[in-house]
Image (cartoon, rainbow, N blue to C red; front, side, top):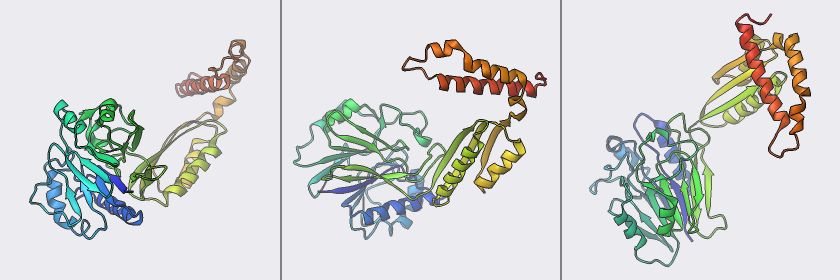
Length: 361
């Protein structure tokens, strides 16, 4: 049995203390999880220059651990780990090309240093690797074929080491421990293996929202791959739409989320749009009361005067009575109430625009 804690894309740099704090959180999690190995799937550093600046200060963190820390270069720190550099007694950078292999108890990890392309020669070499009697993991820095929800962080549109699920499955590993994409993602491959991105342990850009995770691998557990929440810095957003009469529910939801955020290392943002029957000033003050110091993007408009307008009241009644809507109510894929709600909200917007233009009297 082997227990592995996997992370990636920490992007350490001297001016981002929250990222080193996240790395320390990951290693503390490894301490309490009784792991045999920590793996880092590339981009430990944001640049080769950052690696040079931080190497000395990280030696204590990467020493005297009860487990080895195995890392591969990523596209950001591809040249950071020259053979004569010392990062700490517990730290092993896997730089041998085309790949290197490490055995931990009954498990073998094949470490693939970053390379821009998955060449046929490389894939053949991985497929024809020496047989091993036990679980096998592949540590790599790659662009999986399909976009991952939440995006790739600051990696832009360029796809480094693009590879398909089919190509990965043909390599026949049990675990594919990846880095490069900044959002957590897990997928099962056709060979029975599990591919996983842990995501950044601390948000690098505002696109990386939500609590961050590491990945715990236990080769003998029934649930052998698990995402582990981290208490580390992250961005988060709450996007809400309010409709007339729904103000109290929205305010309660904001208050509940703020309570959760107060116990985390988070930089949140709240966005509220839609229409309210409350006075705009009163609703704005209510938002401030429940959100505290958190920034709220308030795009709501009052429709108090519109709701009582005879023309709108007539439209609303006619909408409810439309026989054509009820004629298709039996279709499984048709939501009459949902459609009416959508039309109602669109009409609110139109009436509000007309009122603002002075065309509704």
